[in-house]
Amino acid sequence: MHSNELFLKDVSGFLGGYYAAIALMNGIAAVILWQRKNQPGWAIIWTVFASFMMVLGSLALSGTESTVPALPEAARNLVNSLSGPVNYTVGTTVLLVAFFVYRKFFVQPMVAWTLFNVALLLMGLSMADQNFALIVMKADNVPIVGLVFLLAFFTWVATKQAVVNDERIARGEPPMEKVNDEKVLVWPDLVYTELICMIAVSAFLLAWAILLPAPLEEPASSVKTPNPSKAPWYFLGLQEMLVYFDPWYAGVVLPSLVIFGLMAMPYLDFNKKGNGYYSIAERKFAYLTWQFGFLELWITLIILGTFLRGPNWNFFGPFEYWTPYKVEVLNNVSLTQVFWTRFLDQPIPVAAAGSSALTQIGTILLREAPGLLLVGGYLVLLPPLMAVTIFRRYYAKMGFLRYMVMANLMLLMLSLPLKMVLRWTMNLSYIISIPELSLNF
Image (tube, rainbow, N blue to C red; front, side, top):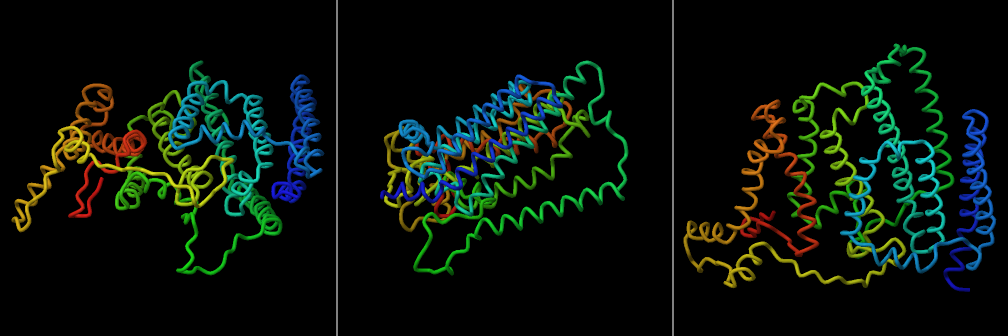
């Protein structure tokens, strides 16, 4: 018996229960839509879908390679061939923009429920692939899968509330938070709610601990290093940044700027609208900046590092085997090399042996002049230029100090995707490279 057949025998029970759970969920939804929502059309659709899930569950329980539902091999190979850091980042950015532009469509309950079921169906079909299942069903990664769905759900809830409020405000009505602003007593309302939540979460964690073995490994050994060696999931975004930046910047400066930016946000915000209630139309700039920084520059990097970065920190497709022998040749170059050797066709300036400290400093400044000018223009000249053009209204309302803090924080945040693009297109490792001072940027 082939290894894939043995794998399907092992996971057939799980897949059968998985599809049965989806069928039960949609059966309950159909009953609610029929009796309480008076939507018989949608009730029939989800009843049919629940029946389809039961059929898939029955086929999955057979445990044979020919009957277990799975994505076609051609589709899996296509996904693997299209996978890569560039396509992944561009694709997630396009999705983020689409969800923002067409948010009124995506917040509709039936649209969201359809997307949710499509995601569950695709995951079930994908888990019949051994390579995909070994990553997604790993005990360390199961909570991350759940967190992705939870994040999507609560983002949808907040967006739906914002869309409703924006429509009400456009009609001259108060937001929903102002309508339902009756006081709730801490005792007994809040305490009872917290008690019930505590009991429910405790029962869930107890069941989780019984059903899913703890991912305990052997004691650490200096002669056997895990490959890939990954940080905890909440630091995988930082670990991914190390691909594009020096450790001092990716591990110290950027996290510190994130914390500083969150602390400074209440003092930089001059927009009094949207306080105390959800709104997108009244806070588009703040909303887009936050969503891009949180979802695109943090969550997607965590997902990439968890599920798509394999041995030697190479990128692997979702259905690709994580072989430790995969080698990707990257001829990384610095901006100094590009400017002096490729553009000017001259050797990189080097100080003569035994030269004075002042001469060595001058040589370093000359050698790194392109990078220093580029970074200086980006951080020093660009904020005033934006102040008299696209951010003129913000500068007038914020003043010089608050505007400069906001502009530099935003530019430093944008340095991550810009550096990622330079790395993908030019294999550019550093814009400024001063190894004499262990300073690279």
